[in-house]
Image (cartoon, rainbow, N blue to C red):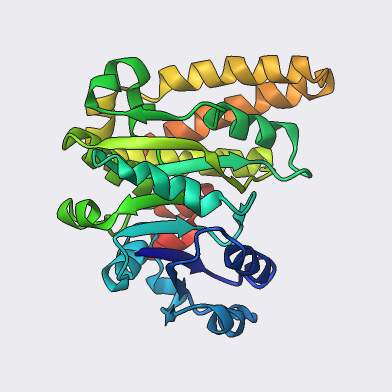
Length: 302
């Protein structure tokens, strides 16, 4: 059996469309669990119309890893699919295609292809095209020398996990600012399991981050890497992959003749680098400053 888990918070703008889309999937044998962080809009009301189980937690209790782990413990499915509230299946074969890959018993987790929404800016579109190519792949521990930190890439917006292995390795870790998918992906790879990327399992999901939002996001990535230094030690530093991304993004802007965005490209990547470095060294910063630099400032209240 399959369990679909969706963490929500003030999701009424997206939720009905997502849940209606799930009803139209070719794969219909699933349990739907929605875990909500005390939304103040109509999210809970909508969720109860569709879900088999609605779990309500306090907004302060929400944790990227801990909340997902809580839902996993209550799920009855052998395969757990996690979707974020702002993701939307691309077609009716989204679930069917990602579940198929688990016929390979070596696969412990898989993530699908994310396609940008039409209104996404060029920076957001490039991010999706760079990270989610047209060709599927399966990565193992033997691929670390080739792919580095991307060997353990998963996604918190659309990914599936074999519950038995997820539980065996300790489930998602509580109290991570972000990166719960990378954390468990790294543990799976180092434990000898495989991670799959399924290009035919597609969802719409993208953001048009401002330069300041990108700065804050990379600050939080730096915090994550600082708190979990073993990941960089085992898989390699993120800066090498970052350099490849920056070059690809520049070529993408040129390809789209978006020369007017070159100053923004230069500033944006400089701010990303600065944000990441500050995040890595956040322990040396005053707490009042840290909260202002972080995208997930609610996390710091803990």
